[in-house]
Image (cartoon, rainbow, N blue to C red; front, side):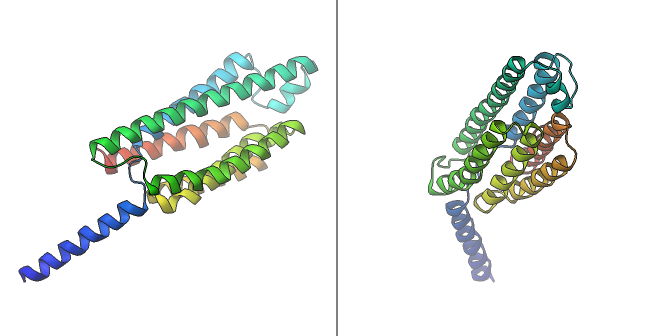
Length: 211
């Protein structure tokens, strides 16, 4: 009986070691919460400061502006989005590295490299696609495009980390597709997809794996 229990425990230990060697399990739920807060803050800045309380229908708002102001508005919105992205990445790295040290794991490992590659391929492809949309002035498809390609990146990365990442990616893709069918509500879908979903995901992850 004791030998059987020892064998079962050994199998669990081996399975855990294999999982840790192939999957990056140091992602922190706090990084998701902060990413959501940054996304919502960026949306509020865009609406109240950059758009001057303008319509959330960006296409309509653009049509009433002179061309020079439209270009300026576009660059301000891009800068706002880049700030949100930069802060989210920095906090993700900080909290994940902190979690890895707390658990005695290596942050930069073969698993984390595979995770990074699986995320970067859809993100870089999406980034180029968004540039094409900007050049062609298809402003209404930018937020849907961001959500869809970000969701694809998360779904692709799900096999190298927690399963929750995969499901978050699917929800982001669905949100992006719905946004594509409802033009003009980009800020609302930005808040939901990058803000609310991230916060819910972060809380679930933190309570499940860190609390």
